[in-house]
Image 1: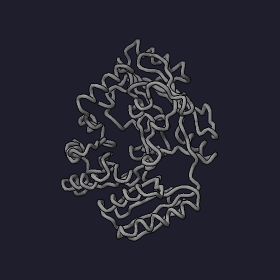
Image 2: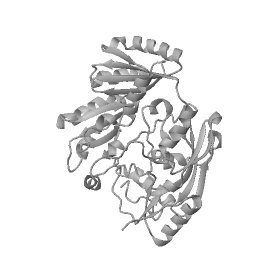
Image 3: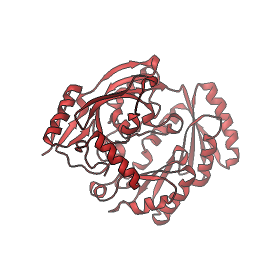
Image 4: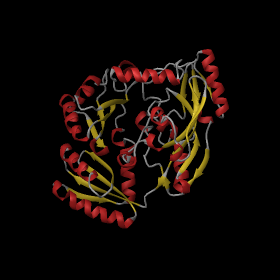
Length: 389
């Protein structure tokens, strides 16, 4: 039966890793466990529960930096920032409801290790771009630090780029420093109604390439949404300009105010449109925006009941498919063709995730590089073994 190790600080965390290394014990690394159903199933001897290493270490609103321990819940971080009208600009999504959990679970470190970002990724960058510094323990039992609490202190190798997206397979962090930004005073969303996928992508790309500082562009069936943020006079002026730019799109236009916009974009961020049917398979497809409609068209030609919506100006497709034993992974990845895109299986039963590649298969050169990185950080494969295949 799997046991649980719950360290209370960085010292106990290192001791736990040293013990696991000495005993040859594999570790299921988790914070609140909100994303356990994402990735290949793991069979670990022990759970390394980081929820005991929790709390805000330092918050400097004037310097736009917050430092916190690894097990600190996301909701606690967001509540703290809201008191000073600040935010995590990369909009880390709450995937708990999509994966069968209650909303409001998960940690900021978990989002960073998955490199998860919402609609503002196009204008604010990926999660890894906001990670200033961190400390932790690698699979050799060695404590290490990287970066600092301000951007200028980051030196040497950019370990944030390596660890973000590693899903806890390289190292266990105990503390992180993250860049924050002022939250916008006002938000407006221009809705274009009735555009098909190709026309919607053209409109989104035109909006993102305009001088109107669009911070989000998404297309749901029947609605293409363009987000503007900032102080009220600026938002009002840019909304007027965006309406004029979109006049030739041939769509009826409506505008959402701040409260309606925040609700709408929170739903896009958390993939709420695909939550209604929990038995469906869910894929996340990243691709060049202009290729999205063709990719989805090839999939729908074989699976007419597929449901989908676009984010990142068409560069991200969230796709829901009927249940199947192989998650239609050959169809989905085959539809990418030579676009250079990649597809990640986000939601599927454990047996399906065990049978098919969850993450996009890589070239031999990239696999060799990944192996060398893994051997550098975790040569005995202590952390989350097999999660990324």
